[in-house]
Image (cartoon, rainbow, N blue to C red; front, side, top):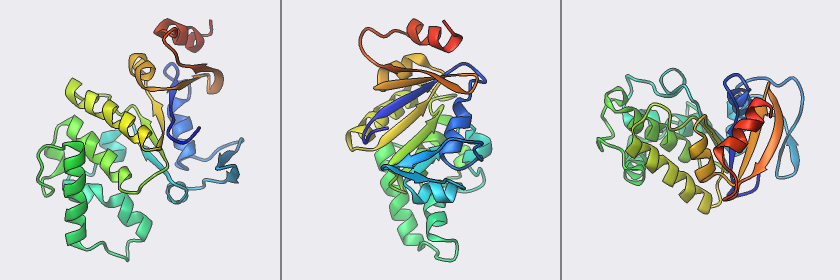
Length: 220
């Protein structure tokens, strides 16, 4: 991937999309292959190692792997940042509030009270909090696994627009989605997986339609 590029990862259920995303974040162990960052091989043994290499990951399982329901918006937002600094280097409460308010404004999170419990937010606003958690770490590569699943149309549009804005600011994005319309609308290149293997890489253009990708996904 290149700086500022949005690459889509497409494939049928069971094709290995999420597995690739998790491997790139060090959440799962790889059986082979290699990861290169800026031309250098990197062994991503854990999420902490991936974060230190400028990689962030928003899981598709927002409820089970994302939010901590009984914590506030502020507390959920600063988790990744606190983890990178070490749990014994506590981020002062005043700084936490400043950070939370900044991203509440940037992402238009509603309600705007950083002390609101995240479990009381809509799915779209919970997803925005998860995005804020990772944007706070200033990643160079943001991996988004089904970021628009289970949220309303308005929140979907906001997240898609955010992706474009981040790309224009030179952040690279790997966009994993089963919504081919969204993939075509946002991605410069589309990597197609089948049976956990990369089978095609498509340069997006006005001539590419959903049926073209579906043929690759299904094997012709």
